[in-house]
Length: 310
Image (cartoon, rainbow, N blue to C red):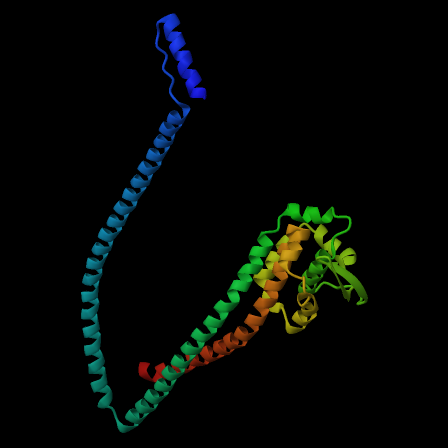
């Protein structure tokens, strides 16, 4: 309807003023603007692709040159290896010409060396196994550190200003204090409401202890330092004290988030530290055992080398 009215007005203007008026539809102008934007975007995309290809070609060329240099070095190393092999053969001939006593000693040293190498291979296998177990524990540590980083000073201030913190916040802080080995109040039964469900639990220590802990400006840095340096001090007894909290139906980050962002982060931190301990307590004895075995191997290998040096 509107385009027809515009057309009639243009005709009337021509009849009166004897001048043509041309009206360009806004949709066409929008199309031209959209076309320009698409063209600029595609042009930029093609330029980026061209740059990536050129960089890739440069790297391939550099790699080819590096390979040539490595081949030259490899030839030099092969020459040195042959020289070393010849020297070793000469040394073997000299050793074979020694007396029977020296020969017997050499055989004993060889047997001892083989035993050292066998122990070395076994230690390397056990080291690899322990490292695999350790890698399974590291994600929990990373999760704990990320949980602390997600909490801001603003979140802590928000908690401080709450007149009546919800029960999930109070219980989460109990979990934090148990990990930090902060003293809690005496145990007594108390009804708690978590996620609109009432459960029989124990009285929390939020008012008596947690408020003072939050008031410390180093609270967040204390948690981060614990995750980094004190995590291996967590013991089974601590985790056992945390189990009643962790086994609660609604003691989880999703429910804690409804109360506050800080509660969510602290809930994640508590759970992650417990999971890290469960994984690390399998790895730590293995790592300690490997340290002892490695030290024994080094000492034995040095003893093995002494007769050869003489």
